[in-house]
Length: 284
Image (cartoon, rainbow, N blue to C red; front, side, top):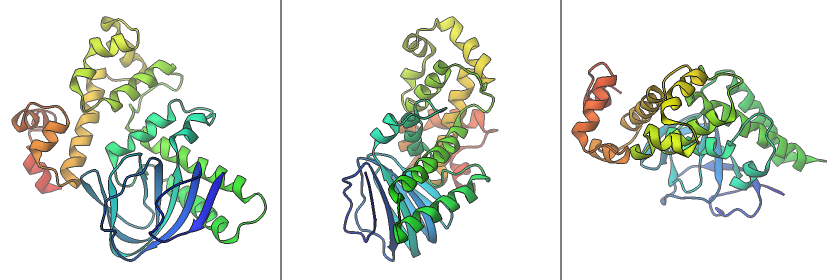
């Protein structure tokens, strides 16, 4: 079942598997919120900042943002903002039979690592705009089979979100790569804050592969070494923290499992042409 309505700020509970809400905001909510469901927020108009898990990321018209269950967030409104909110419980993506996307729920959870607008493919911006317009039309005008149409539009948005988040996966991953390589990538991204879980013997044991074969297996399917992928993914997340969050560098070091700020700085300089964390943040 789908619940459609134009709402204010007072209702934040969800009683259906999917809800689509049209919301206007003139003031910033005082309290941070967290939900038990996914929420996609498409910005129809206005500007401001999305505060999520300690990061503050600017938003503007055309942005699509994905909040995952238990993310602490609020919208800081600079100019009157109009949002289309699409909410769905994890069970919706668990139970739906997606044709070509394995572990969709796990993929969507990676949005917490990214924050901000999740659209990376330029060609997807007009698609999302058209889907948002269609969902708004359904809210305002209804009509026969509106619930069925709305469900299809919501699922299309979910797939678009998934393929943009998937851009964080190795670009050279083979089209016919077996399911296990996708599971390994999902595991790495889900455990990126736990270095001990990313050691080759641990990953190999988790997926029933010998530790000596894991490296060549990953490179064969992804075009890069497993360590190169782990390092690159971690660096992109650290750069995001430096650009958009108010976290102190020692807090970022702790989050990613480094022994201290000096250890993180040495790691960052090694892979970013000698640029220190402080200089990178100042230049961002």
